[in-house]
Length: 552
Image 1: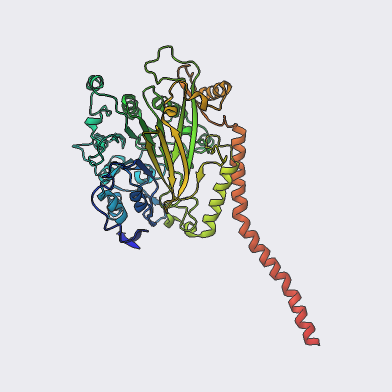
Image 2 (image 1 turned 180 degrees about the vertical axis):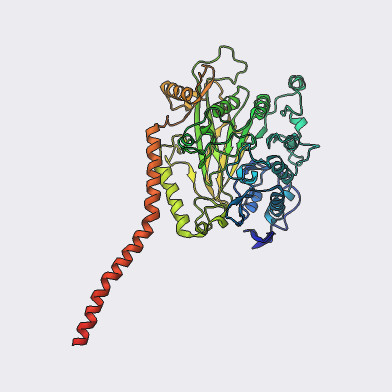
């Protein structure tokens, strides 16, 4: 076992990896220097400094071109003041945590191997739980993150935006058609997607002269913290959707819509710290996702489903488990003028949620908490086992119709185990293979999707649809009520692929989960009471036996 001990003030943290000494001896050269290297990118989120970090050697063994953080690279809001109040993460504290992360042998070896490291933030590495645009250190903490990634203002548009307080968002483009001995990561200028680097005029001129790039993957990372609208804590408003709420802010929206609108990549991956498809819970203070801001969610779908955007995939984190989700999107009236052969009235949009590199709802041997020092219960096995049971119950009983079911086994595609997500492109077969990988390198979930199906090529996507026109019409009416506006016929309406969840069913599922949790939590109390009663009943019997023995 390799371990590192870090200190901050009077606090001491343990950092460890499962790796052996072999990690320290790994070559500094890229392991992909062979003509048959795979076209892989790996994603991960929610890595706490309080636990062993078992994935770094697993990632190296899987030989990716890039590793992308999907949020919560560290947990900076893990301290309390003398009154017991949680302290927000300051720039100094974040810098210390990032420096310690960089000295963990497994992570150090990954960086040294030449794998590209990219990503964005979520709330805990932003500095405060469920953080929003009111956070005072949003700029400074963002700068610490891009410094952790090794990005410099001289060469990175993302770093320059962060230094101006705009947010931690950007795009990186990987050309897998290049010789593996060369770097597959294109510069911002070479990629040409970032509007802050290449002007619209220059991009249009370049587009006419540059041939189509067939083995290119673009990874867009969004910042859902720096410009996020605060979520109300007042009752009953906190249990209602907020139509005018936003995650990105207008400047980031303008950047993203133009950047992805330029993309000619064969695969486009969009990374968000919080889930996009999932409407799992009513309270945005407890479970964050894009559905609580319906207008912003709808706008995101329109941006991603532009005609030029081939094979889009969403990658998200935050919730300490992994899920595969799907929405089917449809235009009720197709545009009469098709700008490209790709334009279609139907699209399929998958979401890969990967969360819990060090802790998850199923990690009962460690903790379900990212900040275990906040509560003694976090390291109490029965407590962790209880929450694992609750989450299993929720996945099997709730009407979560966006949750993918395997076509062969009909099993819901989720896992409570610690995980990372691997996206591999098979260019010969024109497919994308998605694997959710566990701590020992085992495959937790696996799916394979055709790039043309995801791109909305005419005639390809329609056969995948399970929904009727009525389902989309119902969803449209609900959306218009949620956003207090009319949706035009040429906009995509995105619906959970197994149908619209009934609001009453959703409410009942929440109630049943809460009831199950309450009954489960008091079950040990019933056991204790039962034991006490049993013991008290045995005492008179024991005394009478002793009396009879004395009489004899």
